Every structure is written in C-alpha cells, then in structure tokens.
Image (tube, rainbow, N blue to C red; front, side, top):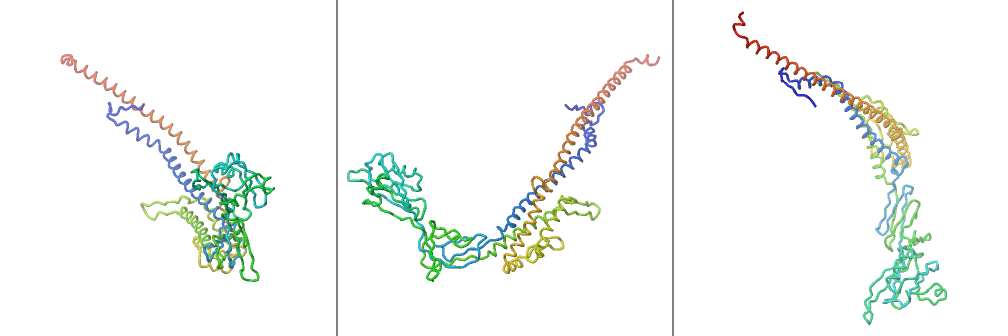
Length: 460
C-alpha cells in the first residue's frame, strides 16, 4: 500500500516528485512498449496481406486449371428446352424437336371400404417382369399404403377419399406412383400372391372396374435433324439428355412440335470478366504493397520522415518482385501484353479489355493457355509465400510474433522493477518526512525550554 505523507513537514508534493522520477526510470519500458506496439501493427498488416495472398492463390488456381476461363455460353430459342454447356463443350448450332417428355407411371384403384383378405397380399410386377410380394397388416387402405411405401420398390402409395357406399361406410382409393420417370419405371399391381400372378389368376388392380392407369411410364423423346434423311431419335428415362453433344446437357420441359434451336459458343463476356477480376485482384495486392512501402521524407523544419508499414521489409519487397515477374514475363515467347495484361514503368498492373476481347476472338485456345500459364506462376508464387506451414511471409509473421512475445517478457520484468523502485522511493520519502518531523519536534522542545528560562537566569 502506497504511503502518502505529502507536505507533512517538508511541504513537498512527494507524490508528484515520485511520479516524475518514475517517469524517468520508466523510459526504457516506454520505449519497449512503443516498439511492441509498432511490431503489433506490422504483424496485423502482414496477416492481412497474407490472407489476401491466400485468396489470390485460390483464384489463380481456378484460372490455372482453366475452369474459370473456359466458359461456354449455351442458348435456346424456346423455354421448352434448356441447355447447359460445360467447359469441354465445342461451339454448335442445331435444331431439336421435342416429341414427348418423360412421365411417371401412375395407377389408381377402384373405391373400396375394406379388402376382405387379412392380411392383404399384393404382388408388384416391374417393367422387367420381376415379381415382389407385399403383405399388409389388414385390408384397410392405410395399411396397404403403409406396406407399399415401406417396401423400398420406388413406388409410393397415397390414400384418396372416395365418398361413402350405400350403407354409409367411407370409401377410399389407392393411387400408386413410381418415383422415377421412364418406361423402365412402369409397373403393375396384382391382388394376390406371386403364384397367382404366374398362374394368371391374380387380379390387376388397374383392370378392375373403377381402376385405371392414370399415366404410363414413358421415356422422353426428341429428334435431331427432323425431316431429313439423317433424322435421329434420342430417348432418355429422364427429361435431361446428358452429353447429347460432347459437354452439353439438354433438359426438356414440354413437348414442342416446332423445332427449337439450341447453340453453344464461346462465352467472351464471361471469360473477359473472369480474367479482369483475376488481374484486378492481383493489381490491388500490388498496390497495397506499394502504398505500405512508401516513405515520406521531411521537407522542412517541424516535419518528420514517415515510413510505411512495409518499408524496408525484404520479404514483402521480394514478394512484390516475384508477383510482378510472374505476371509480366513472356510465356513461350508470347508477352502477356499481347492479351492486354501489362505493367507500366511504375509497376502498376492494368488490363485492357478491348485488347483481350480481340485476342479471344482471334484464338480463344491460345488466350486461355496464356492466361492459365500466368495464373499458374502467380499461384506458385502466392503459395510459396502464404503457405500456412512453411510460407516465407508466414515465417516472417511468426518471427515478428516471437519478437513481440520477447518484448512482452521484457516489459513484464520492467514492470516488476518499476514497482519495486516506486516502493523504495515511497519508503525513502516517508522516512525523510518522519526524520524531519522528529527534528521539528526536537526543535520545538528546545525552543519551549529556552523560552521557559527566567530573565534573571538569562542575564546571570
């Protein structure tokens, strides 16, 4: 607990004196704290730079493998047909006639109150003629539906209310629907076991009076080059024709008697935007490094020289040079500037969309190859510096963090020393005030003794 004896005898403000002395003693500690704060700011900026570098590596990887820069644009003249083109697709234009969409097989039974069989036995026959027996707990519509739904045959059963019979008993129907479309999903439901079906004595529920096949499972059907000698019929169990053309999927929504024109061509706009975004991200990173490396020199009295957070950092400087080299060096003798990617004499990276579009129209494969090569070099550089385990920039950050921890330990030791020094000063000034108080008491005692002497004794 600090002693407070300000002005007890001496009249001095000892607390202020101690604070002033402590300020002097704390100068080394203050310098260490300022150094730690500066390094903390540097670490924060380096970490932000490292995160941006990792994001750049991710985008560069996508550009290097061609997936982001190999876009193809698919078109259709009608919403009855949707076209999807993957990067490996080739340009094409053709007409398609949609004859039929794929349908699910659906059957509804006649109305009934309760099947007399207990338990009720049904046999389902699939499109291949395979038979599967299903036993329901009772002849009720609910139990039959539950048994069919739990059989795992890709057929769903639904109970539908059908009014009442003459006696007022509720009637119900069962609707069975295949989960998949196509003719292979067609089925028949027989009342009876498999042996009865084989013997021809089982009853087809759809053939009973009041029962019916609502829709027949059928494949989707389209025609290419309809009306010509080369007409070709193509079917699919679903409404999507996968790889109808290399790298092209076609999905139909409804039949169309009129031909639908579908096409695939190079997505110039998409490729240009993808390249522009990649270059823009790299340019922004280079600009951040440049801005952080600037030094402002004092230009007169009263001004000071200021240094950027990256000024003098050899790792960041080497990173900047490596990224610039990755994007400006020729690839196989071809300069990146030929497709609009260039660095000016100040090191600023730019992208000329007009030049890139013209080069893409002339030779899209060559442009894609060049961009992929540049991106691969950028990716390699970015990963070399930003790898979370052995990246050069990562190592730089770890080194700075180690220095901050060391400075923190030194500051903690200084805090202990300064606390001890303050305690010593407080005890010293407290003793001083005590001694002065004792001397003052002695002086007052002598003065009172002298004052008590009689005049006669004083004159003897």
